[in-house]
Amino acid sequence: MGSGKPDPGDEHSSAEHQDAGLEPAEGAARPADYQPVVAGRARAGMFGVSDAGDTSGYGGLRLPAHVAPPTERPYGGWFDELADDLLEALRAKGIAESAIQQVTVDRGEITFYVHREHLVGVCWTLREDPSLRFELCSSVSAVDYGVDVPQRLHSVYHLTSMTYRRRIRLEVAVDVDDPHIPSVVEVYPTADWQERENWDMFGIVYDGHPALTRILMPDDWDGHPQRKDYPLGGIPVEYKGAEIPPPDERRAYS
Image 1 (tube, rainbow, N blue to C red):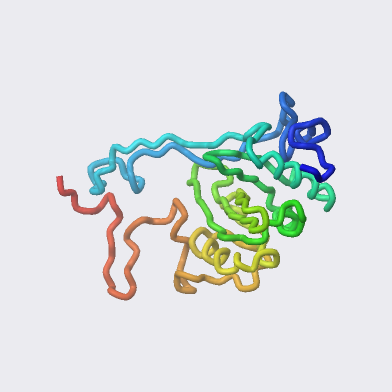
Image 2: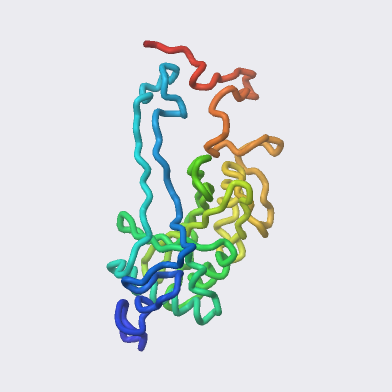
């Protein structure tokens, strides 16, 4: 690379590091208490209904869980170079490598799962380090994997390096009983309204956000409509006064 740093996978590169975090050395065991991030569950039917009350026609649908496992070195392509540069930058800022909970490469994309207490520091590092330069947070989305999944709420950050023309994803997983994640608005101002939408729809609390208020639902709305345990029907349509029954109470046409 001409930068004086070891090439990815060479001696003294991060591929040789033995601690938990960004990646273990090849063949090295992970810590005994390590738990991979759960990001999926098997599903049956549609809208939570699997009997004749489901008028969508998808009552017999069966979807297996897809959970991309942690990826071991080498990641392939420029991902190894990026991981080496990130590890070196984190060390320079005094951020523990264990801030990165897991690395997953799936469908040609790399995701860094970050412990929430280190999220802001990792974002500053990714934005400011000359070898990384992820200047743009193009979106902040969220996922609720359902009531049977530990740390079911995920906040997902899509970062773009306009300098190096690279895209990566950060992901933070939290429990529904403690849905607090630090806001990254101070690092990426574009996250402002997107964090508000995630709060509105999923109930993720972004600590330190300048104005964490609802953006789609009325201010006095009860609940967060895109959570998996939110009722699917029976909610009054306020501007019409109508009420849509839940799927298992709708008229069957067969």
